[in-house]
Image 1 (cartoon, rainbow, N blue to C red):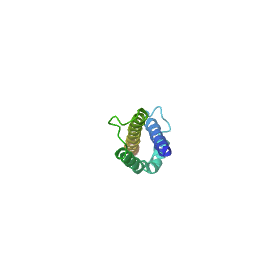
Image 2 (cartoon, rainbow, N blue to C red):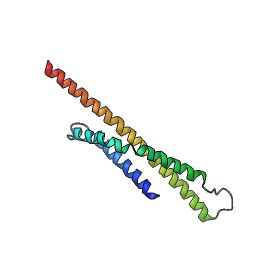
Image 3 (cartoon, helix red, strand yellow):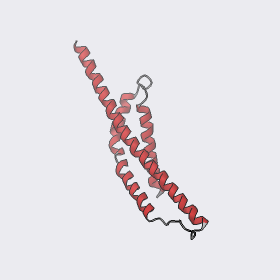
Image 4 (cartoon, rainbow, N blue to C red):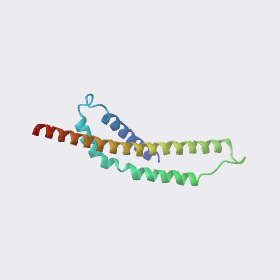
Length: 131
């Protein structure tokens, strides 16, 4: 079960790195056009993060609803510690899923915005050349 969290963690990390590289100023980032085209090509494979994240959210909910509760004195300290660790893991995993989904949405929005900016720059250059 840990492999799925590693996969979504790496996907979120790759999305974050691409976001950082895309949002660098033009003067610093001379490879911007290639990066935009590579990111546009990777948007479709990264779309699999969305259903995968939803599946993992359902998995967290199922584990939460079937989890034993330690609310009375019948729990030993080890049971109580296991219960608390399980809650913390679920919260960490939910934050990881939310980050991956947020990074995908930001990556999609920023890529489309930069693509539109490049398209408008080309139109401006074309109009300047006609005059």
